Amino acid sequence: MIEPRILIGRAPPINPHPYDVVAQWIQEKYPDIAPRFHLCTFPFRLRESAPYKLFVQWVQDPIDVVNPMTFLQAMELQYDCNSQEIPIVNGVDRHRNTAKIQAHQRLSGAGIRTPRIHTFRNPKEFMQALPNLTYPLILREDVSHGKQFCLLNNEDDLRQAPFGNFYRPVLSEFIDVQSDDGRYRKYRSVVAGGRVISHHVQVSDSWETRGKQRIKDAATREEEIAYISNPDPFAKEMLEVAKALELEFAGIDYAIDRKGDLVVWEANQYPHLHFSTKDLIYRNFAMERTIAAMVLSYLELAGVEPPEKLVHQAGYDVSVN
Image 1 (cartoon, rainbow, N blue to C red):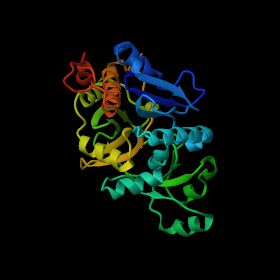
Image 2 (image 1 turned 135 degrees about the vertical axis):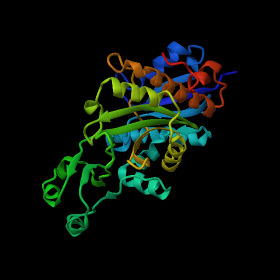
Image 3 (image 1 turned 90 degrees about the horizontal axis):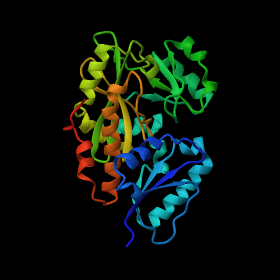
């Protein structure tokens, strides 16, 4: 009898692949279950009565924009899986759920605070909207993560903004989440199945809180360790975000305003995963927990009994070195 397996679809030709770190982690930490994971490269089709109990998409979103051919091939494989009643994690047909326009509609509809989004179908709509816009605004890309940002403080900034540099430009509400100490904080939580993992917190002097702007000192180190050593305080809300976006796995970026209320920036169904080798090595235990929860969710969705050690590793009763 063939043991149930988990099929993981990847786009070609990425070498090394961004999630090689996950595949290598499984092989090194849990070699007994590694054979259950089958990595395939698109195009790939299923034969009848395939041994797979789960299909996982490891492809960059939005794949229909990044690589339309891979999108079509992934959809063909999803069709095969649907015909054999094989569950799918983060289907490519749901990638657009995390685009700014769609995400705002879905999250606000679920009662989750997220920046309002302004979009325009044509120049006439744009000109008509100008007198009614509230500044500042952020010019950003609708369909991707981590791309160019542009802060617009007034109408002159807006008229001179580089709209042509964007595939699908949108204007996002600017929500001021500056803390009492004058700094900004961006938290990332990872939802994997029914688990929520506190993944990292970045502290910056800039409203645009990204890795390059991260402040690295003893205080921010201790602050981050405190956050990632404990369950996320907004775990319930993180699960609601994933549910609203129809995602089984997601990295969710958020902030906390001065009133202590949650502001969700965005969700990414393909968040960057890596182990630090230099000054952020102290947070690698959180990466271990994230990957453990990710792999555990796959096994559970596939109906495979997980190793007890893996269940333990995905929890918060693990000692921190």
